Image (cartoon, rainbow, N blue to C red; front, side, top):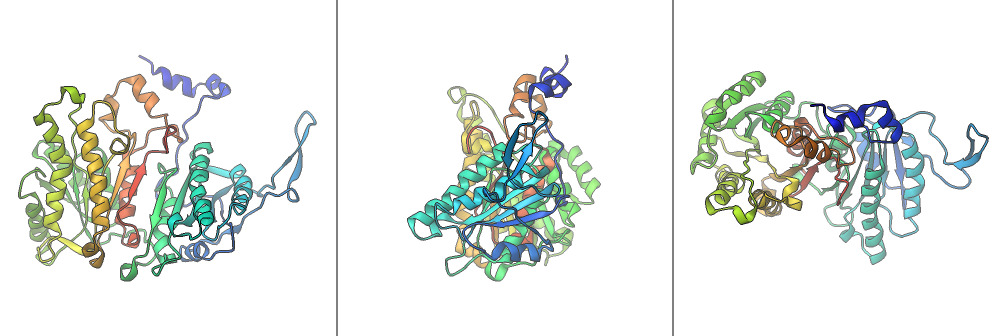
Length: 472
């Protein structure tokens, strides 16, 4: 049977009728092809320019839309109108430093620099706004003006087309531990590159890493580092393992015995190590550490643990018994808590190293809920609370360990392919990018959070959903 929705979104008539067309997204460690433009609002600012310098990016100055800079344009029928000034060619990105913005009047400067840029943005272009954590901005007017950036950025993300994205980064410049260019570099690099292809409408928080600050992001940031990935035998887990291996990691791929064949194929393909393990086993944490110590030596330590393994047992809550309920919470939440507790033992051979990373895979279902998935939503929401609590733990901060989560939306996995046709096709077009994400999009977000250069980000949830059109 022909895919009716696909036909409606690919034939020439559909284009004429304005049916949204998915765009091939720019992916990987590639910057935009067009130039990066730097703009400011509220004052000159210096943090973003310093960060771009650190990344080796020489930006263009932004054009500003004012009555004096507009030009007259005549269409084919001889009608004239005033339009904003135009860039000489398509631009790849605009980065707006709004950290000095303090008044409602300053918001006009945001509009004035974004309008010309949005008209000239290339396919898969980027809009990145950098503002202050609103609660640190001072006077109520400054707090309100900084908060307004969230509404602007998320709206722009929903207005963009052709695979372009818009995201907001919040920094802290007004307390005793201000965010530095070194702290911001990894996040800004991620958002400009193709690695953030399926991230839009997000608010990312960057603090200060202190002594844990790392140099600017490298192309192979995990060279020689040990990374453990659970649920690595297929789908998103396999993509995570492949991405870390691409970036230099020695990967320990973990999955249950039933997935052993797929696990072996993944491990062989990336030159990694396979470990068949049920993560709900009481000794799962010690077995992971023991495997690392045996394979790499007693002095070896894990740099990153990626908790990807998870299950669903979908039924309406009214039809869910205690056994079905417990099985999901045990795999998706309780097992991770136990494993973390073991691997965080500082003296444990094969445990998590100082400066290490814990990244867990949650879900947008944990944020919004979903009919028939009460146990799954509970487990994924529980992970968000776990990450927030561990990210605020001063004992982990002293060791330079960060804890973060990603929350995928619709991702084109084998499981998603089993969803009924119409529901699947409609579901994957309910976001600003008009398509499902790929497993590699989740993997790239996880690798970003695990990067040694991302030391200033902890306790955060990074949604990989293409910006849902309904909701924030």
